[in-house]
Amino acid sequence: MIHKKTHIILFFTFSFLFTYLSAQKVESEAKTKCFNFKTLGLYDSTESISNSIHGFTQLNVFDGTNSDEVWWSKNAICVQGKFEIDSSKTNYLFLKWNKDQTECDWVGLGFGWDGWSAKDMAYLKDSLAFALTLRSSREISNLPWAFGLEDYNGNQCWVGFKKDFLSKSSINKTWNTILIPVSAFPIMENEVDLTATKQLIIQLFAAGEIELKSIRMVPFQNK
Image (cartoon, rainbow, N blue to C red):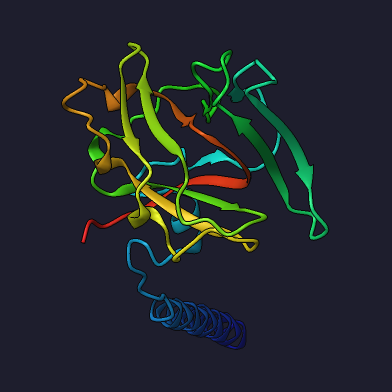
């Protein structure tokens, strides 16, 4: 009987020790894992930068491909648009226009983006810009364009092209970027509701040719 009790006591003792040591190991591993976390800033994540700016996710205005969110003037005498792919498999829109003709009172194109949904940019009007990536077969430092924002009430505000928008001194055969800050538009004066932004419009003047690769919303800090 005493021998049997001894076995029982030893069994429970070893069981307790095994359970205790296992728990200590798990706790130790958990503590080690806790200290392996990396501290990240709010915008350190690549995904955050590429897909959101302070919670605004409707960043892709135009990606160089055809969709029902892109339109231009119907009269082919005034403007012609063609979606193409170059040798590097880059999609872009080739535009050729000539407004200096009798049938071309208004010539332009527009981008509804994000399925023509109402885009709320009001809280970020001082922190966003439209980045247009484009190139030209001949070197130019001035684009005869005006840029407009339209809301779902039909209100519009416009700003003309400025050389300050250029990231380089000119537009040439390589891809260049022009930045149009949202704050550059006379929004308040024209009572445009940025909580219900409908589309970006580009009005074309004079004559020219351009290749437009993309339009994206990017962070902008007014200097």
